[in-house]
Image (cartoon, rainbow, N blue to C red; front, side, top):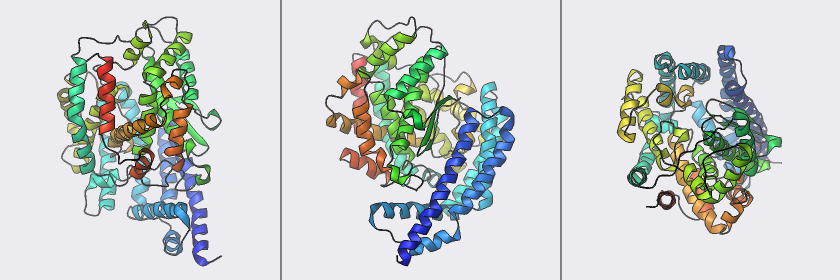
Length: 494
């Protein structure tokens, strides 16, 4: 065995331990959101900081530089592993260990502060923590950008290759048609009914479990718990999901569940040979969101699948207002005024993301001060949606992301929607009989296509390349906007 091959093998053995420790670190975050006692916040912050110090030391270990200089593996898999490890080493080496540890400690504590502030609608209680998180993230961005754009440096953590300019151009391409469509459906003479009925929490969780199973979630390698803000966590052989229950709005639970199952199935669908390597996780948050959004929307909110969902709801709940499957389909997809991004319909969802994109970009650049964030949010929300925010938990405090430092993450939601639109077009072309299967609650053909064309590759390819290879064309906003216009003009009889 020559020295180059040995260097690669040694590096991959080292990396396997780093990936395993990163999974343990992620489990700390999952526990904090689901099981951890409230009084443990300060201790968990110290634990998270200590774990990040260990991970940062491994990601910047001097041996990596030597291995990267000597290592040479054959084939696409080895080349991709080298690409990811080199990128991680280069980025992490720019960030002092002290800063990485402090960020982990502060964001863990800030998450608890946010949860308390959200519950009490007390913005002022959260602002000092948020200010410190932003200070640290700006310091980190300055290390990474080295004179370049701070926000671009943060985006690169979640969507390699994307920039504020490219994402801004995407939003500019989407906004006019979304605003026009929203206006048309809200002013339409026909309006679907809102859902009315009683939906106990036990029944909701039973249906949620049926939905997760219907979308292929592997219960031997996952579990479902409750959280304030639904999320998925983990990968490899342990990909967990959370959901939430609102007793007068079961769709909140059902579609949060399907969404998080999409994330988890991506992780569980990655080639098992990539486990505990840099290729063993989703390649970017945009691609990750493409899976959760196509599961949730193009499949889960389709006319065919909602007919099956209605039958499952009939088996659990004594009475609700759905006279037939067409009326129920309209109810599921009803466009309405609302505050919450995660509850937004497909027409308005991306407008919620655009608001956050502009505000967080201004926070990182220093053009918007933390003290002015709530008023800036409320002003922008009224301008974009036509009504005022009633309370902070429906406004600036609704999302967990900023409390844990995820600046640059929000725009990947809309990028994921764009990718999902492209994938849906290719999926429908490949599976012309799909609706007949969805009407029986059978998503297996669709999820198998997504697993074969997207999920199994993990980090093998660059993000946009994954989508282009699956679809046969470069991703763009056209398929998503065409899908939305066709769907909602039909529902609203325009």
